[in-house]
Amino acid sequence: MIQSVNPSNNELIKTYQEISDIELQSVLERMQLAFEDWKNQSFSFRAALMKKAAGLLRKKREDYSKLMTFEMGKPISQSRAEIDKCVWVCDYYAENAEKFLADELVQTDASKSFVTYQPLGVILAVMPWNFPFWQVFRFAAPTLMAGNVGILKHASNVSGCSLAIEEIFTEAGFPEFVFKSVILNSSRIKDLISNPIVQAVSLTGSVPAGKSVASVAGSQIKKTVLELGGSDPYVVLEDADLNLAVQTCVNSRLINGGQSCIAAKRLIVVKEVYEKFTEMYVDFMKQKKMGDPFDESNDLGPQASLKLRDELHHQVLRSIEAGAKLLLGGFIPDMKGAYYPPTVLSEVNPGMPAFDEELFGPVAAIVKAENEEDAVRLANNTVFGLGAAVFTRDLNRGEKIAKEKLNAGSCFVNQLVRSDPRLPFGGIKESGFGRELSIFGIREFVNIKTVVIK
Image (tube, rainbow, N blue to C red; front, top):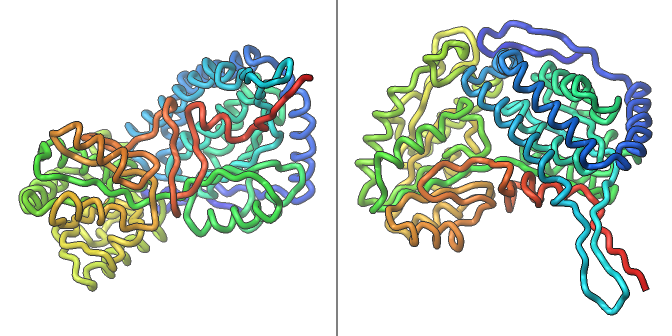
C-alpha cells in the first residue's frame, strides 16, 4: 500500500493499492499495441488532442492546484502557476512538434538522402514530487507528440496527481494506453526498466536514483535522460545591482519551499559587497511568511514530508558545527506539519554540507569570494552542474561569464534560473545528461534515422 500524507498537518489523505506484476505486464502489452496505432497518427491529429489536454488544464486549474498543495505543500499561488506552465508546454509542442521532427534533406552522392525522426515506443517516466504536474507534462507533451506512448511512475507521495494526469489525457481523447500512470513502489523500477517493452527512461530525481536507473538501463542498452538536481551558484559581483540581486536570490531560494533543483542555493558574493549583500539578504528573508499553503499571504508552506524536513535540519546543524554562521532560522518550529523557516547561513566554505551538498529547502548559503576569478572557481567547485546565475551591471561581462566560465546546463545573467519550453533544460556532471524541452527535448526519444536512396 502507498500512502499520500498532507505535509501541512501530517494527516493521511489517501491510501493507494499497488499494481500487481500481472496487471503491470498487461498494461505494458496494451501500451505496445496502442503505440503501433499511435505512431501512425498525423501530427495534426496528435496536436488537436494535446490542445484539448491544455484546455482541460485551464478549465480545472483550481482543482489541480489544490490537489498539488494538499499532497506536497507548495503555496497555492505557485500551484496555479505550475498548471499554467503545463498549459504552455502542451500548446508549445502541439504547435511545433511537426516542424521539429520534419525530415531533413542532406546532399550526398545518392539520388536522395535524408534524416528522419521516428518514435521508439513505450517510454518510462520516473518523476519527482516537487513539481508534480510540470515535471510530467514537460516529459509527456514532447514524448506523445513524437508518436511515443508514456508510462508514468510518479513519486509515491503524489499518487493523486499521478492519476489526475492520466485522467487529463483520457478526457482529452487520447487513445487508451497512450499514457498510463502506474502506482508501484520504487523497489520495482528496476524490473520495469528491464521489461523488453520499455524502450527508454526519463528520470528526474536524486543522484542515487539517477545512478541506479542509469546502471539498469545501461545494462539493457536503453536510452536515458537524467535530471538529478543541483547546488546552483548565484555569483554577485562588485558592480551588481544589489537590490535586484537580493530580491532575485531570495525569491529563487524560497520558490516551492526551497525544493527546486534550480533554486539559488550557494550565493557567492565578492568581498567588496559581501557585508552589504548579507545584511540586505537577511532583512528581505525576514519579511517572508511561513504557514498554511492555502493562505495567499504566505510565501512558504511546509516541506514535502517530516523526513525530508529533518534531513535538511541535520544538514544545517552539521554546517554550523563545521564553522558556518547562523544568521536566520535554523530551527524546527513548534507547529504541526513539516515546516522549516527561511534560514540563512554565512561564512560557508567548501567542506561544509551547505556548500558540498544539495540543500533541498529554504536554506541559503552565503559564500565570500575574493574577486571574479575566485567567485567563478567557487561556483564551479561542485559535483553538480544544472543552473547558475551571475549579477553584474556590465552585460558583456555577464554574458562572457555565463557563456564561457560557469559550468552548468543553464546560465542566466541578472535573473533567476528557470525552465522554459522554448529552451533546452538539463545539466552536466552529477546533475545528469540529456535535455528536456525545446527542439532538443523532443529529439531525445526518437530514432534519428538515416535514409539513403541510390
